[in-house]
Amino acid sequence: MARAEAPSLARALADWRRLVVKVGSALVVEPKDGRPRHDWMRALAGELARLRRTGCEVILVSSGAIAFGRPVIARERGRALRLEERQAAAAIGQIGLLAAWQEAFAAFDQPVAQLLLTIGDLEDRRRYVNARNTVETLLQRGILPIVNENDTVATQEIRFGDNDRLAARVAVLAEADGLLLLSDIDGFYTADPRRDPQARHVAVIETIDETIRRQAGPPAGGSIGSGGMLTKIQAAEIATRAGVAVGITDGRVAGPLTVLLAGDRRGTLILPQGRRERSRKEWLKSRMLTDGTLIVDAGAAAALARGASLLAAGIRQVEGNFPIGALVAIRDEEGRLLGQGLAGHDAATLRMIAGQRTPQIAARLGPAADRPAIHRDDLVLRTAGTGRPHQPQEQDDENG
Image 1 (cartoon, rainbow, N blue to C red):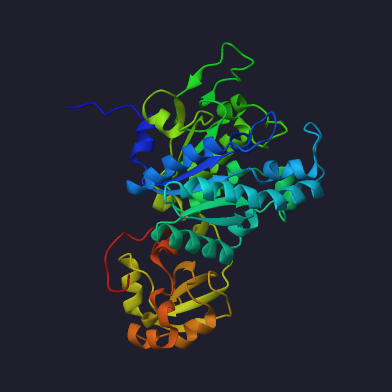
Image 2 (image 1 turned 180 degrees about the vertical axis):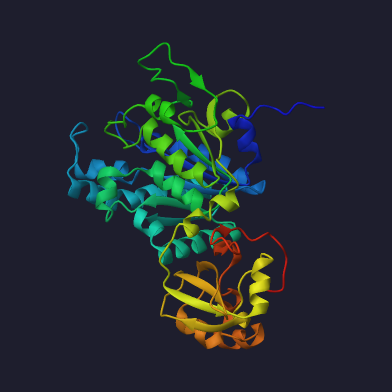
């Protein structure tokens, strides 16, 4: 019997079909003088464009807006910027950062789009669903999303946040296979190798525990960027809990992905902590307060148990007033709780189309008729007799 190969970041990267790549400020500008690293950006753009052509969907999370705008706001390199200066620098620099990425990707005929997010966008249910739908639409059309934190308005995130954790949340939102954090170090060490000659490189982390957190050390305090190894481990905890694998490697060399895949540069692979499709629904299962209720007939209840989406045809009654993306309970006509999920339409629309078939709905809603009342990916069911959520089995069904 053939022995399975030990996991490694290079092998994982070759297998991932949907990938989030995060680059920090220190990679897109020169640390000494703050000049944009256009050649490095062009090399990475070429790698990501080639990945797209091989069938791997890619999302880029790029820091650097404040670093791009800083020379206009403050010419003194060593001085810390005040909050309002950081916000102004972000407003100026975001234009230059996107323009630099657009130019880099244009050389490889790869269209890009910009998404500016705050952590709040990914915690509010409606905004979360809207962001996810936008990302899905872009990827389906072959467009590479470039995500950054909206530093101009995200005051708390500027002070305490970092794009490592934003990238992890984007990876969860996009249901990515992997999150690759490009850093200024070739992975995780048992101590800071720049200070401790006894520090050992760790190729694979199976579980993030207190030892790993302690070895990660304190957050970085440099003038460019706000992340360190600790923030990368915190980001990895967010991602791996949702079933997304995480890689950390040195991104400073031109073409870092090519170098990694060739075996010329090592990295650290942090393994996911469960099935992605199951883990991703923990967010839904943890929600206790619903904004409304959908009463469904026996046919819809049976279809849900087989793993289908909930279609409007099976809805008998809509209770409450809620927006699209709200968390709603699903009950049968006897009042038994079947599950809960995110509404694909608002309450008024669901009342209008409840009990109707697709042709009737299409006449009323047009293209929006393609959205089910609740998509099975946004749905968790309750196990009969226990009250515990369980996952619908993946299965083709007319109601899916």
